[in-house]
Image: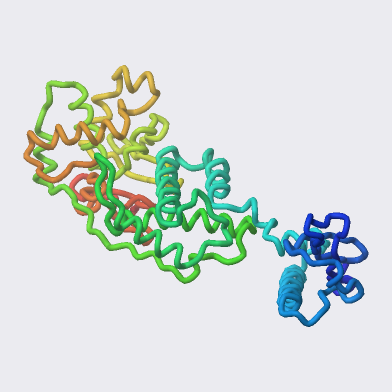
Amino acid sequence: MSTANNTFGITFYIKRNKATQSGKAPIYARITINGARMDISIKRTVDPDNWNAGKGMAKGTKEEMALLNNYLEKYRSGIVESYQELVLHKRLITAELVRDKFTGKDQSEFTLTKLMEYHNDDQGNILEPGTMKNYYTTQKYVREFMEKRHKTRDKYLSELSYKFITEFEYFLRKRKPEKGQRKLETNGVMKHLERFLKMINLAVRLEWLDRNPFHAYQLKFLKVEREHLTKEELARIEDKDFNMERLQIVKDLFVFSCYTGLAYIDVFNLKPSHLVEKSEDNIWIMTNRKKTNEPVKVPLLPKALGIVRKYKRHPLALAAGTVLPTLSNQKLNSYLKEIARPVQYYETAYFSHRKAHFCNNSYFIKRGSNRDGEQDARAYDANYYPDLRESA
């Protein structure tokens, strides 16, 4: 039915049979659309003798009656505004919809908590566990912010505003870290806000929210030059042998990544089928990045190839069906710190440094805008593969 053909009316009446002990009767607003009716208690009472049933308003000249009639007109205007909003959205309009719009019942299910729960259910099977863990942390901070700043455990999505976003940013910057945590720096704060923005965008797509509170907000990340190993530092790591097998494995995994540029998760998932032999001693890694599903084409440089051959029959690699034995990323970074000390690498050692080394030592010709070599890049080292200059 076209909204232009709707019949719409609002009247006020009293229920005499529900009069209070003082004799006053409750006042109701009746919304009528196309003959269908819906009643709302306006939370006001009046003496039946002071009520004009024909006009649907209080009668008399007393100030009390004038104030009541003024309230009724404001109430009527609110209902009309709700009706007009529904008309603008070209919704099929019913008296119940108008009532829910006016009372806010249509938004009662759309809260931040509901959104976070929906996001986790919807994205939990799509995003990687590590990514979801970051979302859980962001959601924890949102709840903490609401409890401390707004003294509530939840908010209607319709209550969110630009002010809410900026206050949340300030809260994150000033938040006292828990034991074992570091204070959030600017980029850490921005990552939490970026995840929050993605959840709000989901609410907009679901039509749970008409207006995006992030509309005027800009994420401002600071450009950070990633530290990288020098060739001399990498050489010291390569030359060091460890008696403990776990440390030797970690060292080899790190060196392998330095000569391929692969993220640890991609090394973790690397299988023999991803190694393509184009000619003798000319083997390429052909796989897809776990994070972005972008193709990766990287030649195995001699040192990386040596590591592959070293672990070809290692029990852990054979059991997992992978090219190399692997450990959890958390343990890996922890063991890297043990490796860094004896080779006099004084910076905090993390597996992510392998990518910066790979990129800062001319191991690749890249295609695409990213400098990290992990999109559609073909890696090479001119000392070992001078013939790749043309084909890369």
